[in-house]
Each structure stands twice: as C-alpha cells, then as structure tokens.
Image (cartoon, rainbow, N blue to C red):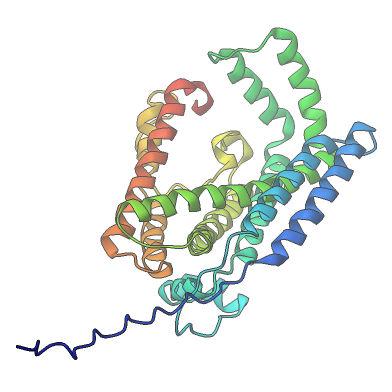
Length: 332
C-alpha cells in the first residue's frame, strides 16, 4: 500500500532578513583624536610652566578625547519608519513644553551635543559668578576650616598652603578658564555615567534600549532641569546678600523649592539632605527621567521607566546622605 503523503514537501524555511547595517558616529573619533592632541599640547605647556594649571586641564581634555573616541565605535540605533529629525532649536525649546515628542524623536535621532554643551556652559558661568560674588577668600577659608574639622584632616602645613595658593589660583584668569573647561568636560562624563546606569536599569526591568538613546535622553533630562535651576539661582545670587549665602551649598543651587527649609543643616545634616530631595524641581526631574526612558527606548514600559527613575533617585539620595553623615561640617 503506497504512502498517501509521499508527495508531501515541507515548506521552505522562512527567509530571515539581515539587520540593516547601522552606521557609527565616525566624527566622534576625529573629535576625540583632536582633543587628545590638544590635551597633550596643554599638558606640555603646563609642565613647561607656559600654561598655568595646564596639566590638569590637559589631562581632562585627553580623557574627554578618549571617551569620545571610544564611543565612536558604538553603532547608532536602527529605528524603522523613523520621523524626520528635529532641528537643534526645536529640541532645545520643545523639551520644555512637549518633552514626549522630543524624546520620541531622540529614539531615532539621538542628538545630544548641544544640550550637553549648554549644560556645561551654564554650570561654568554660574560657578564663576558665584565665586566672584561670594569672593574666593571666603570660599577657600570656609572649605579649609571645614577640612580641618573633618575626619580626613590634612597636615597643618598643607592647610596653610591651601589657604594662600587656593585664593591666588581662584583669582587667576587661567585658573578660571581651566575651571570652565573641566566643568564642561565633567558634564560629558556625568551624562555618560548616568546614561550607563539608566541603560542597565532598563535592561534589568525587562526593557530594550540602545546606549545612544539613553545618552541623548539623559542629556535632555538634565538640560531643562539645569537651565531652570541655574537661571533662578543667578537671580537669587545677585538679589540676596552674599553674607546670607552658604559658600559650599550655594555652589550647586540657591533654589529652595524643597523641604530642606524645615531642617537646619548644621544640626541635622542627614535629614537636611533627605528633605532637600523632596521638592518641585526634584519631582520634575524624576518625571522627566521616566518619560525620557519610556519614549526614547526601543521597548520600555511605563513601569520600567518609573522603576529606573525611582531607583536612581534613591541611590543618589543614599549617596548624598552618606556623604552628609561623614562630612557634616561642610553643611553647617
């Protein structure tokens, strides 16, 4: 008896389309090389005493060049049916009144340079204005006094050297320019660090996200938060009496939109740090982080976005409370 299925032919295997080749941000490699070369030149100038504070500034430029060169080997994300990219002005303005649209556009077009540069420039401008307003003498002497009371008290000769040389360097135009450079460089590294934590958090919560998407999202989370905070702080800095401004805490912000007003930092440093995290801008940043991760990633649920945002919020809060417990004198 013949087999009725002898003419049956199995269907051919499905054709798996290869993933489209994703480009790399090659321009970052050349920018990184240029920064490394520039950093080496500045370091040599510092060693030869031709550029004051050149060693530290040059090293920071070299580190930024290494970061950009390394990131240039990371492929850009591939998004199907991608919308046209928004212009820089549209992103920088839209993040304030239509953040969801901006983050969705960043999913396919993770642009971040303008936001990070503005963040770094605003921070550098504020710290420069703060130093001039409060005076380098008061800031340096206050810092040295608190170091003398801290558990890591340096030797007396080192403290005396910090008082004299610290004030001179703070007044030096070269040192002020170096501070601007290191502040901007630090912004790039801060965004990269937080983006890496966000990416790990999204993956841990079962989401899917590309590093460049996380990097761009974090940059556009920090940008509006920093812009609002520093603009208000600038106004308070020149309205309030310098004698009423804390020479350490005021370097970050002068905005008091939180519950920190309920505690005296000198008496309850840990509770003060905890209370300062409960405020309008803090919750705005928390909401913006959750929204950015949800909209900028490939597949990130609302619960995953909020889970990562709250986890990072708690981690940084615990870190701040630990520092306040170890060095309470700097808050007094």
